[in-house]
Image 1 (cartoon, rainbow, N blue to C red):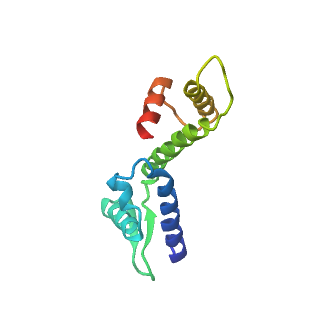
Image 2: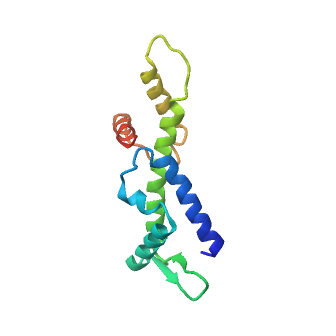
Length: 140
Protein backbone atom coordinates (compact mmCIF):
# COMPACT_ATOMS: atom_id res chain seq x y z
CA UNK A 1 0.00 0.00 0.00
CA UNK A 2 1.22 3.48 -0.72
CA UNK A 3 1.54 5.93 2.16
CA UNK A 4 -1.87 7.49 1.40
CA UNK A 5 -3.48 4.06 1.10
CA UNK A 6 -1.98 2.91 4.40
CA UNK A 7 -3.19 6.11 6.08
CA UNK A 8 -6.64 5.49 4.56
CA UNK A 9 -6.62 1.91 5.88
CA UNK A 10 -5.70 3.15 9.35
CA UNK A 11 -8.38 5.87 9.30
CA UNK A 12 -11.09 3.52 7.98
CA UNK A 13 -10.20 0.82 10.50
CA UNK A 14 -10.46 3.33 13.37
CA UNK A 15 -13.81 4.58 12.00
CA UNK A 16 -15.24 1.06 11.70
CA UNK A 17 -14.04 0.17 15.19
CA UNK A 18 -15.82 3.20 16.66
CA UNK A 19 -19.13 1.73 15.56
CA UNK A 20 -18.34 -1.86 16.47
CA UNK A 21 -16.53 -1.63 19.78
CA UNK A 22 -19.36 -0.06 21.73
CA UNK A 23 -20.37 -3.58 22.67
CA UNK A 24 -17.03 -5.32 22.25
CA UNK A 25 -14.76 -2.79 23.96
CA UNK A 26 -12.87 -5.49 25.84
CA UNK A 27 -12.09 -7.62 22.79
CA UNK A 28 -8.26 -7.75 22.53
CA UNK A 29 -8.33 -8.42 18.79
CA UNK A 30 -10.28 -5.23 18.13
CA UNK A 31 -8.08 -3.25 20.52
CA UNK A 32 -5.07 -4.29 18.44
CA UNK A 33 -6.59 -2.54 15.42
CA UNK A 34 -7.10 0.81 17.16
CA UNK A 35 -3.82 2.37 16.04
CA UNK A 36 -1.30 2.21 13.22
CA UNK A 37 1.10 0.02 15.19
CA UNK A 38 -1.63 -2.58 15.75
CA UNK A 39 -2.67 -2.57 12.10
CA UNK A 40 0.97 -2.92 11.03
CA UNK A 41 1.43 -5.76 13.52
CA UNK A 42 -1.63 -7.51 12.06
CA UNK A 43 -0.34 -7.08 8.50
CA UNK A 44 3.09 -8.39 9.54
CA UNK A 45 1.42 -11.40 11.16
CA UNK A 46 -0.46 -12.12 7.93
CA UNK A 47 2.83 -11.88 6.02
CA UNK A 48 4.55 -14.31 8.41
CA UNK A 49 1.63 -16.72 7.97
CA UNK A 50 2.09 -16.79 4.20
CA UNK A 51 -1.30 -15.42 3.19
CA UNK A 52 0.18 -12.14 2.05
CA UNK A 53 3.62 -11.02 1.01
CA UNK A 54 5.41 -7.88 2.09
CA UNK A 55 7.65 -5.71 -0.07
CA UNK A 56 10.06 -3.43 1.80
CA UNK A 57 11.96 -1.92 -1.16
CA UNK A 58 10.04 1.36 -1.21
CA UNK A 59 9.48 4.19 1.21
CA UNK A 60 7.12 2.03 3.26
CA UNK A 61 5.98 -1.61 3.28
CA UNK A 62 3.58 -2.79 0.59
CA UNK A 63 1.39 -5.87 1.13
CA UNK A 64 -0.31 -8.09 -1.43
CA UNK A 65 -2.37 -11.24 -1.24
CA UNK A 66 -0.35 -14.23 -2.40
CA UNK A 67 -1.41 -16.17 -5.51
CA UNK A 68 -3.80 -18.94 -4.53
CA UNK A 69 -4.80 -17.12 -1.32
CA UNK A 70 -7.58 -14.93 -2.74
CA UNK A 71 -10.28 -17.44 -1.81
CA UNK A 72 -9.00 -17.54 1.77
CA UNK A 73 -8.94 -13.73 1.90
CA UNK A 74 -12.47 -13.60 0.46
CA UNK A 75 -13.66 -16.02 3.15
CA UNK A 76 -12.34 -13.79 5.94
CA UNK A 77 -13.62 -10.64 4.23
CA UNK A 78 -17.10 -12.13 3.87
CA UNK A 79 -17.06 -13.35 7.47
CA UNK A 80 -16.28 -9.84 8.65
CA UNK A 81 -18.98 -8.35 6.43
CA UNK A 82 -21.54 -10.67 8.00
CA UNK A 83 -20.91 -9.14 11.40
CA UNK A 84 -21.61 -5.67 10.00
CA UNK A 85 -24.68 -6.83 8.06
CA UNK A 86 -26.22 -8.53 11.09
CA UNK A 87 -25.53 -5.47 13.22
CA UNK A 88 -26.98 -3.13 10.57
CA UNK A 89 -30.14 -5.23 10.31
CA UNK A 90 -30.54 -5.05 14.08
CA UNK A 91 -30.00 -1.29 14.25
CA UNK A 92 -32.32 -0.47 11.33
CA UNK A 93 -35.05 -2.75 12.67
CA UNK A 94 -35.01 -0.83 15.94
CA UNK A 95 -35.85 2.37 14.04
CA UNK A 96 -39.26 1.04 13.02
CA UNK A 97 -41.74 3.25 14.86
CA UNK A 98 -44.99 1.67 13.71
CA UNK A 99 -47.46 0.97 16.47
CA UNK A 100 -49.03 -2.46 16.22
CA UNK A 101 -51.58 -3.43 18.84
CA UNK A 102 -51.21 -7.14 18.04
CA UNK A 103 -47.56 -7.30 19.09
CA UNK A 104 -45.24 -5.33 21.33
CA UNK A 105 -42.30 -3.20 20.22
CA UNK A 106 -39.74 -5.98 20.72
CA UNK A 107 -41.65 -8.45 18.55
CA UNK A 108 -42.19 -5.72 15.94
CA UNK A 109 -38.42 -5.13 15.86
CA UNK A 110 -37.79 -8.85 15.31
CA UNK A 111 -40.38 -8.95 12.51
CA UNK A 112 -38.68 -5.98 10.89
CA UNK A 113 -35.26 -7.61 11.31
CA UNK A 114 -36.44 -10.79 9.60
CA UNK A 115 -38.00 -8.76 6.78
CA UNK A 116 -34.76 -6.79 6.31
CA UNK A 117 -32.78 -10.01 6.40
CA UNK A 118 -34.79 -11.29 3.44
CA UNK A 119 -33.70 -8.38 1.22
CA UNK A 120 -30.07 -9.51 0.74
CA UNK A 121 -30.83 -13.24 1.02
CA UNK A 122 -29.25 -13.92 -2.37
CA UNK A 123 -26.08 -12.07 -1.37
CA UNK A 124 -25.52 -13.60 2.06
CA UNK A 125 -26.18 -16.87 3.80
CA UNK A 126 -28.15 -16.37 6.99
CA UNK A 127 -28.85 -18.80 9.79
CA UNK A 128 -32.34 -20.07 10.47
CA UNK A 129 -34.48 -17.48 12.25
CA UNK A 130 -33.93 -18.76 15.80
CA UNK A 131 -30.17 -19.12 15.30
CA UNK A 132 -30.05 -15.66 13.68
CA UNK A 133 -31.93 -14.20 16.65
CA UNK A 134 -29.47 -15.80 19.11
CA UNK A 135 -26.48 -14.62 17.09
CA UNK A 136 -27.77 -11.05 16.95
CA UNK A 137 -28.54 -10.99 20.68
CA UNK A 138 -25.13 -12.46 21.48
CA UNK A 139 -23.24 -9.93 19.31
CA UNK A 140 -25.07 -6.85 20.57
